[in-house]
Image: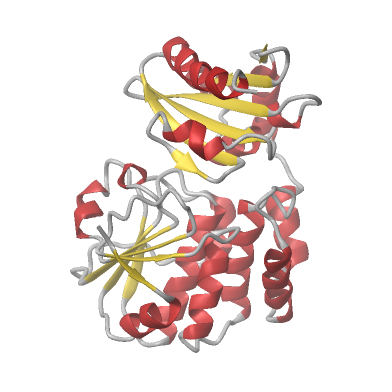
Length: 318
């Protein structure tokens, strides 16, 4: 069970650490990367030696974050996980750090409190928590750090369209704009361009579209064969997850992705009427109220049956 910290205590603790390793979750998105990068730049500004590690490759579109990757040039003395509610998010190549994690900085209410200490605030994104922490540390929010934090906030809120967006979210973004975040460039890079492989993947994915429960649930599948045919990467896949829920009349959108080792990854988006995190938690996952996920061992058909059984449970209650 974690020692629960507040912003002030966390800031004070970070002033005393050295040789810091910051861990992003596997299949890294803009929030885990932006938050980790902002923390790295902040700690380096304070004279700390630190680096970032992730089980999966970081996509080229995030090069602007200027991340220093861990190359084993130092022995980590303090380990921080960012935007990671559970140890299953570490990934195979960094799971050895899960039981050594000194601090977790997170925004998920479903956090399992696996780290020795926890800074948890249920904000729209981990980046919003990080912004408050850096202010508490009296860090100079440079334009680079502002870009990192804006990336986290914008990507985790779907460019301020998801239901986790609130007034505080917009105020945090406005603050980052004032501090030099290049929002025009970032919005275009992150939201207004699709790779050709993404477009080809969408065509294939839409051919798998299924409706369930009188059209209140829509489900699509992404297979390894589709990824191989299109050359799509994880960034292309992330953009697909919003499609099922965007269909008129759909309350629960499910995207299933076939992974290696007989595992299916489920991403769920819901309207405010349903709690995606609670549904996914029944299968060992978690996340936000309207955006959550889980991993199910077994082939795609078995995994589909399992998640639809949980959806049936909540839909038939109404």
